[in-house]
Image (cartoon, rainbow, N blue to C red; front, side, top):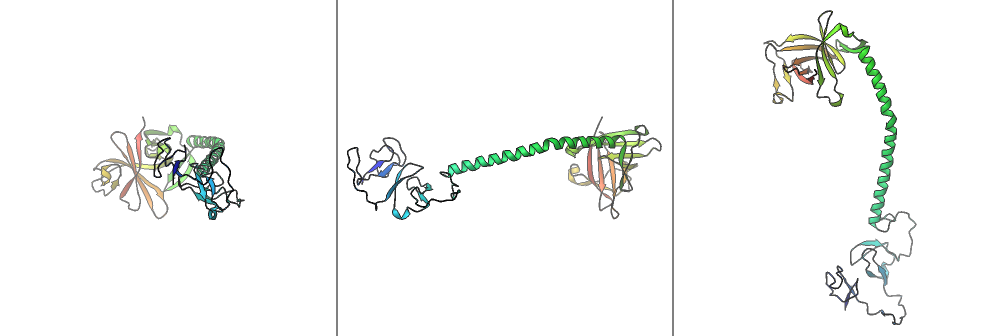
Length: 295
C-alpha cells in the first residue's frame, strides 16, 4: 500500500511525521487505487456499499465513513482526533441548540458566541446601575448636608446616664475647646473629637463620633486595679498606667440596664490620645478609638 501527503499529494512514508516536500504535519494518507484519477479517467459505476467519503472540518482530511456510522450525531477524525457533527446524518435535528456546540459550527465558534453574550449582558447591567446611581447620590448628599448643618448649629446629641438624647446645642461662647483630635481608626467615617470645658461651672465634656459625654479629670492612684489593652501598643499585652497619670473618666457611656460601660480618655505627651471602654469587667478597659491631634 502506498501513502501520499494529504496536502501536496506526493508519496511519503506511512509513519512520516512531516512531509519532506511541503512540510505538512502527519501527512500520510492511504492512496485509493480503486478510484480513477486524472482528467481522462473513465467513470466507474458507483458501489453503494462502499464507505462514503467525508471531509474533516478541522484538518481537511478525506475520511471514509462506514455505513453503520452514517446516522451518528458526531464523528471523530482519525487524523487530528477532533469531534465534529456528522454531515451525512439523514435526520435533521429541529433543536435550535445542538448539544455541545449549541448550533455553532464547532466549539471555537460556540465559545466565542458565549463570550460575546456575556459581554453584552455585563454592559447592560453596568449601564443600568450607573443610570440608577446618578440621581441617588446627589439626593443623599443634599439630605446629609442639611442634617449635618442642623445638628452642628442648633442641636447636639448628648448621653446622660447612659441614655442618648437630642437637645438644643450650647452656644459656642459657653465653652472653651481644650483639645481637638481626629479619629485615625475609622477611615473615611472619621469625625472630629473635642475635649471642652463649660465656662459656667468648670465641668468637662468630650465629643466622640458626634456624641457628647460628660467626663471628670482624675489621676491614676497607687491602689488602682485598672488594666488597659491596646493591640497596637505594648506588644499587644495588657498594661497599667503609672501612678499619677492624668486621665478623664467618662461615666456611663452606655447603660442597657444590666451592663454599665464607662470610658477613660488618656492624653499623651505628644498630644495624641486614646479612649478606652470597659465591658463585662469593671477594671478591664479595651481601646475604643485612637485620636490624632488637630492644630
